[in-house]
Image 1: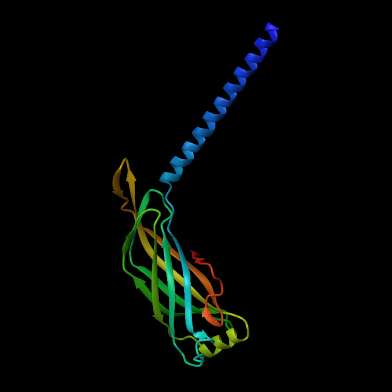
Image 2: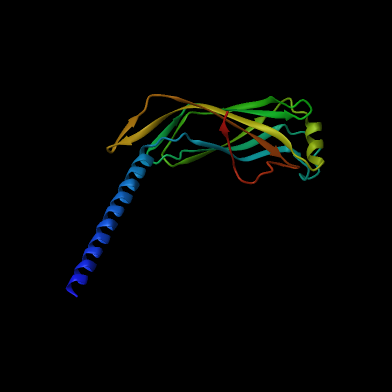
Length: 204
């Protein structure tokens, strides 16, 4: 009886020790992961949340034949870092129209926003209106009236630098990084992008 009790006690002790070692390894791995995540630097994500082309809206009180060359969009810049703020230089935006017949894009307008600072894990929206030029509106209207979509493109470029916290003190990384992203946007006969959710722009 005593012998089996001793073996059972030894087995229980080994099980506790193994559990303790396993828990220590998992905790250590999690701590390293959180440390890496805290100091890991991600470039900001840039997306188009809204894209409106009034000239292609066939339901706007019978004014489909009136050409309004203005294009309005909502540009979202999101800092996904947990410990770094972002200084943006001037953010430049260029719009393009896709010519289906020759399979190429041509620039139709541009704008820019002022430099600004964005705190960590923050987002900023910039709603801009651009008076476009060179869009073949008759062709674009025919495309959307036939139940299809017409394609535009948005390219964004800027330069950034990071501001991070180390031992409760703010420090600025003087090095600047160039960001160049873009994406194609399909527009329907309501004069808005056909995809409801935001379109994240990818590196060019």
